[in-house]
Length: 586
Ligand code: C2O
Image (tube, rainbow, N blue to C red; front, side):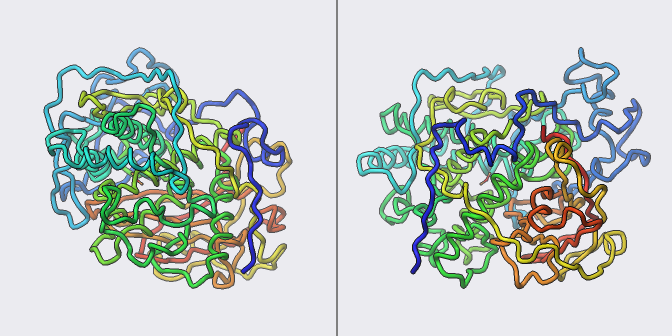
């Protein structure tokens, strides 16, 4: 078997990355505000739920909650005006985007969540919610190091076991119990909370498919780790990360395999205990060799972290504002590998891939926290490569509630979690082996067959492979134009069943996807849903960055490009797709 030679890049020297990677990111220190998706929509004071005049393309969607359909055919700012302006009342002015609408859950009114069989399930935190909940701002005085799971020693493992054993023994009525901690995830993604201010329209707050994915999970792990510290009796303890972006970490970490350990969970895919992890897993095991899977995984990481993550919206996910009824759109890492890994770990013999393969149950498997630590580490790495966080106040002021290690309820804001050193932790430097991995174009300058336009095909149900020829708004842009804005393929109006595992793949200028795959430049990536309850139809979108891909394919001078969608698991309905520019790059 050939051996892989992998360059090791230091993650500690944050600003010394190779200049060839600088071009992917903004180098300008001043980052413009992420534009409000609805700036172009006229604000009226008398719009209502049934107002037919408001555009419905991205702002409206129907979301069935508790069997009802809540048609949100209005702009959320209309609601704010209508009820006298809940937020940002002093900033009402000529600029419609000034109406702030940061998300927050209606925590006190937690109600039953639903599992993917639509069965009610009580995931609410135990105890009563006090009238006043203090805001918590971390002020760490020391920085603990989260270690790679494959590198921890026995002494460290004993501490983790001690903590988890104690948490598993705590009464369910204690919010620090392992069960209550697992249910935090269930309540925040299976419909346990309405958005504060939108209880009447039953708009739920789901922490996936949008820009709050990273900050929510960072805070969740933060409190989980502090509870572990308390029960390990060691405030220097830090949770491990599943280093799935590195060849030595591309297996289920061995610390989770001992069936007599509190780190064990029996509901896992038993075929995957010794198999290499496939970061593009679609529910079927690949027949590729271990070395091929590892190489493809590294290329996948490079695509997701660099090629496809050229804007904040691409990396974090799209903006999710109070009043939004649809799932705005997941970021690169949330989609792949985050979702794939959930599916890969979960037990396929369970009806929804429990535990890890469904969000209501994922937190019951201790590997969940290890998986998410690496997701969180990707945020730090993306920043170290030059990626700039959102500066939008709606993102910064979004908030969540958690119980801390003393079982006290606190409110936390996104703005207070953007720097992990202030949170008291950092990640072990284990290098970034994927940084120099590159995909190969299967063909460059390929002559493309003719295909119907998107208008001739969409809306449609994706039951078989679909290829369309999409006109580009502009070809051969200047270097400056490319630095300023990203050319984006936007697949919008994706209607999917939230209770199903869904996957479809997207190729560009590839009329023969069976010849292609994740290692090829033609493979842009996939759309994936991990079952998260309700089994309702929800609407979302998925975007892909094209600028670098088109250059690599020798297709920058093409008027039209070929987009091919390949269904892999479950069917979705797609409203349409288009190419546009995202100006938030520089
Ligand atoms: Cu909240 Cu891995 O998902």
